[in-house]
Structures are given as C-alpha cells and as structure tokens.
Picture 1 (cartoon, rainbow, N blue to C red):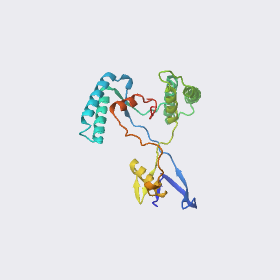
Picture 2 (picture 1 turned 180 degrees about the horizontal axis):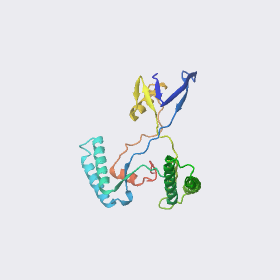
Picture 3 (picture 1 turned 90 degrees about the horizontal axis):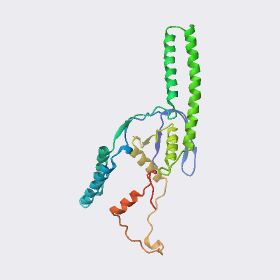
Picture 4 (picture 1 turned 90 degrees about the vertical axis):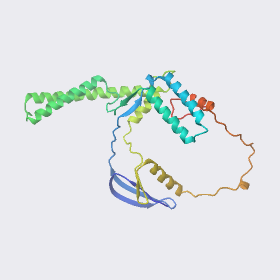
Length: 275
C-alpha cells in the first residue's frame, strides 16, 4: 500500500501511532497551525442585466448552424472547443463587463457608520502625532483621547445594530413570484462570507514526490482509495440471472431535445434535472 503524507504548514509537537481497525493504524499528531489568509484578486464579471440578448440570440443561432455543418467533419472535442470559443467571444462582444475588486467593506456597514470610522481614524492619527511630540500631559491630548473612546463606543453600538438588522433581513428574506429563490441566494452568500479557511486539500507527498496541483491531488487520493478495496473479477454471463424486462431501445439525442432540456433548466440551481 502506498503511503500519502500531508504537509501541514505548522510545528509538530507530538506524533504517535496507535493500532486501528483491521490492518490500518491510526496516526495522531498535535500540530500548531495558523490558517493563511488569501485575499481575492480583482476579476472580471459580466453585467447580465445590461446585455444585448437579441444580438446574443442571433449570434448563437449562427453558431448552432455552424456546429451542425461541422458535426460530421470534426471530433467531439474539436466541436466543443469551437462552441466554447464562440460563446466566449459572443459574451465579450454583447455583455458589458467590469472589474470587481476584493470586497473588504462589510455588507451591513451604512454610510453613517463609515463616516464615523473615518472620523475616528483621523482623530487617531492626530493623537499619534501628539504622542511623537510628547504631549501626554496637555489638556488637548486628554480631550482627544476622550473623543476617541466615546467615538469607539458609538461605532461599536451602531455596528452591532446594523449587523443584527442585516442578519434579520437575510434570515427572513422578501421573495417575489418572479424570483422565488432570491432570498436563499442572499442567505448562502452570507454563509460563504463567514468561512475563514479557503485552503482546501493540503500538499500531498506520494513516494517521495510532492504534489501541489489539483489534478495530481485528486489522482493520488483516488489511488489511495482504490488500494484499500478488493478488486473482483467480472461475473460470467451464465451466472447472471435472466432479466424479466425487455431490452431498451437505443437512446437518440438530437439538437431539438437538448435545446428543450436547456430551456427547462432552473437558473437558480447549479445543476437540475428536468422532469
């Protein structure tokens, strides 16, 4: 059995091996780790509400006719790459875009709270300059320190009120008939923002080789999972019981059927089967 080692970015205090279930041993390790913070890079997003859907439909009709004419002369992979490139070009041409920066501001902060935070920062810088000039005992410094403390209390109170008001609006959303799942979308956005760790699967080491890419990690974990199960040979046809049901006909897939299924997809779900 191959051994997979996980490299954790931390300090190992103690590692012990205990007898486990069957032929597998349990490894217990005490590690001091610190989660890494990854800031989101600026990215391009499409403004679908401002898209020219009429020209997009004309372009997709042209792409559909082109795909039908090439389906007998090109392979499936070549057809997919052609379709993918055509859709990307059409989106860049008929859908406006903007660069979305990393969102550092909390969604529940109101403009009034932001103004108070900026005022607090200005007073804090003014106090720092007074510290450099050794003005600790002056009346102006003491008044400045009192203003900062009072402003902190006001900001803390208003921030807490705005936060719980925002949570209440997320938990009890206002949905409409046109968008019945708009409230659930805001709820899952709120849950996603609460996540602290985005590291995923750590770096793996297989047979002395360090693997850091996603495909290599998936292959290594798949091989490890397959190695703990017993492979059984295929059953002979004469051992299989006869099926009481008739054989199904060949499934035929055409453009009209695929278009019908795509039109019935639920846009509020990542994947949905039409019934």
